[in-house]
Amino acid sequence: MFDVIPPTKHLHPSESALLLFDRAMRIRAISADIVRAAQYLNAYSDQELSELGINRSDLEDTIRRYI
Image (cartoon, rainbow, N blue to C red; front, side):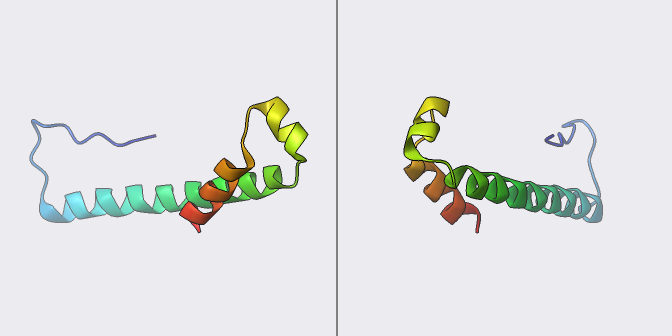
């Protein structure tokens, strides 16, 4: 999931920028998936969430963090 830039290879600044941009776009796409999943789980009752080992406050914090 995470790109690793080999320490022995010196990248041109444009190559580094491209890698950083690519990583940021993938993180942004993953963030949308995280929010959708948290919103879906937020519809569960407190008891159902408890059975899954999830706190509602954690869901709400996750939604706030990624929106």
